[in-house]
Each structure stands twice: as structure tokens, then as C-alpha cells.
Image 1: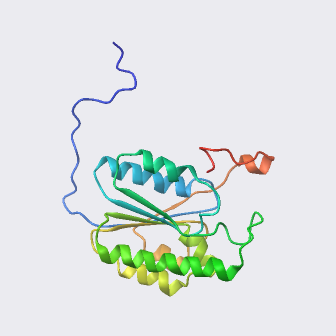
Image 2: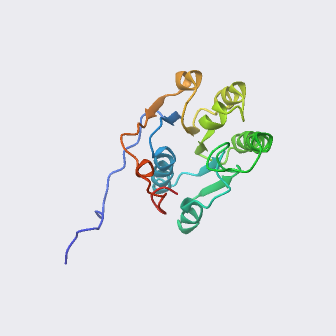
Image 3: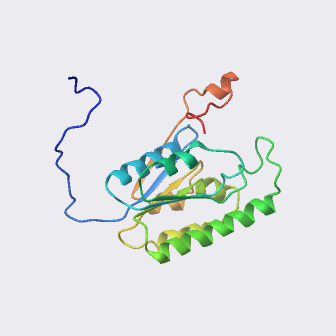
Length: 193
């Protein structure tokens, strides 16, 4: 019988000498920032870690991760708190409504941090929310300062603020080389949303 596509029966697990919660920033103008964070959530699931995803700007159009996470047998919760991407793709909601939702998301982040029930909190598109002034720099820095020592925070979105980058432990920039959308190809399910 072929073993192709199967995992080994016994795998050694690496344990760090010192556990430390990291601040990870995934930014840049290329596709894959949220996808990268979702990959970390999947990896965390394999380690039995508890994950909370708070999407600051998504919520008006369906995203496959909403149902995908429900199908996993993992401690991952997802909150789509936004009204979509402010000011683009014909989004009909006024800036004030986007700001109010982002402010609610900030409150939710503080609730989740205070509850201490998660190992990882993903702040999806918070960098965009900051750039668009839906949240304030001081609010984001306050979130970073309030992070308990073992909690991992992952911040995604374009245009990460230099002060957020400075406080991060790991920063990845995803650059666009080529994108199907620029060739007139519509977003595709499972790839783009």
C-alpha cells in the first residue's frame, strides 16, 4: 500500500526552552496576508492552541474561512466585525459606520485579552483600519502594550505603521509581483476569498 499522502506515525515535537508570546506583523501590497495568518491558525490548531480571529474590515461579503473554520475540530473562533473595505469596490457604508465597527472591534480585542482564554489573537486588517483612521495609533499601541507575555498577536493588512513594525518581533512584507485581478480576472473562491 502506498504511503503517499500520509503522515508518519511518530513525530518528535520541538519545545522551546523559553515560551514567549510574539507580535507578528504581516503587511505589504501583495495577496496572502490574511491567508498567512489563517495558516498560522491552522498550525496552532495542530498544537492544540486556542485562537481568536477578529476581522476589522471584513463582514459584508462571504469569505470561505468563515465556514472552513467551522469544519475544523479546533479551538478557533472568528468574529467578522467590519462592513467591508472602506471606500473601495463600491462599498456603500459611510466612513463613520466603518469607524464605529472598528471601535467595537477594538473593544472586543480588549475583552478577549482580558479573558485570557486564547493563545493567539489575529487582528485581521487592523493595519488597513489604522491607515484609514478607523482606529487610532494609540489604540493599536495600547493593544500591543496590554498583551500578556505568552499571548501571540498577529496583525495583518497593508500599510503597517512604522511604530507597530518597531514593536513587532516578526514582520513579513508580502509584495505583489503579478495579480490575476489586474488582468481582468475576477476574484476566485478558495483563492481570493
